[in-house]
Length: 115
Length: 115
DNA sequence: CACATATGTCATAAAAAACTGACATATACA
DNA sequence: TGTATATGTCAGTTTTTTATGACATATGTG
Image 1 (tube, rainbow over the protein chains, first blue to last red):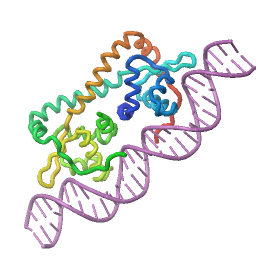
Image 2 (cartoon, rainbow over the protein chains, first blue to last red; image 1 turned 90 degrees about the vertical axis):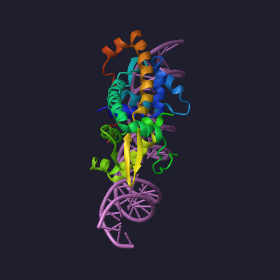
Image 3 (cartoon, each protein chain N blue to C red; image 1 turned 180 degrees about the vertical axis):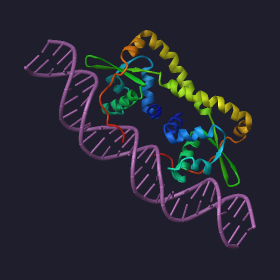
Image 4 (cartoon, chains in turn orange, green, brown, yellow; image 1 turned 90 degrees about the horizontal axis):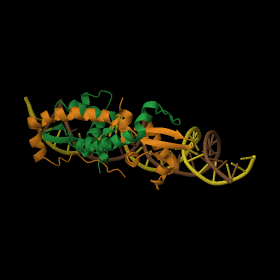
């Protein structure tokens, strides 16, 4: 249900795009210039993904496409997080807290490093 | 920097694992039983990703591995979100709000549906 | 020790996501 | 109309992620 939001936020480039939109709406071309290492098609694909997640709202003016930030969907994530916090407080009180303090780098088995 | 957290949360199975751990720590085998459509190796891979993101903390007892939820990293995401909210309030006041209300389904160009 | 159990590691296959070039459309403006 | 500009679409490759089977280690118990 909220899957698309998480997927949208999982990519570093897309999070950067959202950051760039915090100061106000930007045209697609303006955004493309912010990512010199990426092609225009790529940036547009990221914008589509953000738009499907409703994190970006699009307004057209002539041949310009203005991309607006929409922070509302993050509310959903926030709600989920609040639930965790409340229940986690209980978990901490019941013994996990001391474990966390004593056992900071548990180091499980190895995983191949990405790249 | 907080990339691993977002990546970890992007997957539905991993979010379910975190939900399952809210009630308290679980052994790896217990978690495997919660996902009958997945193999043990797969669940362990997800646990590794969650552990690297520090969303899950591991405690060993004999041959048992107890996986604990750790909600702390979400605080980082929360902080980022709060900043957005504050600045978004400004954005809304300066005209985006009426746009959002009038223009609910902007519908950009088509993207192939996943699957 | 012999055996069951729980977890750890590795190589590989399948699926999904990221990225791109080439071409298409649509608007502005002389 | 002709041309420049900004965005839209498509087909394809590359990279990353997800998933799994086969085998290894490590612990508990008779």
